[in-house]
Image (cartoon, rainbow, N blue to C red; front, side, top):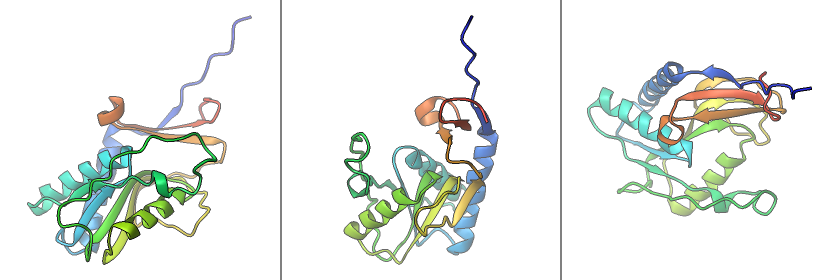
Length: 188
């Protein structure tokens, strides 16, 4: 008897869906902040960095000026250090001019428990004192463990705890897609 075939994860966002979501998020950031002047985008590695760069490009196309964009590694601020396998440290890159008095928009791929964002807020506190911190995510899958909510969401995707949401970006994976599967790999 041959083994059962492993189902392919289901695509919930394709490349054009991701592009539209990021364009909408960029416009919402501009509307809420009355332009690009006060905004600094900080992507959370890994895929949040690529998403922040794409949002920055869209804002520049609309406003005619670039938005300071960087990255914020939260590895050492996580509350699960020692509980999960060790993660490699990523690069933190704060744009020239810093974050003091600015509106910092954290950018991440998937919002789940909220623990990564809590770690990011702690990291920001060690770097400076922004005027405000906002959150942009490509996917909000629910299941929050902390009182954290995204200001800008590409797609609300109700999930069960046995499902895994995976974001693929061309910069890292060769293609743009958001996939969902159960944790055993079966499509849902």
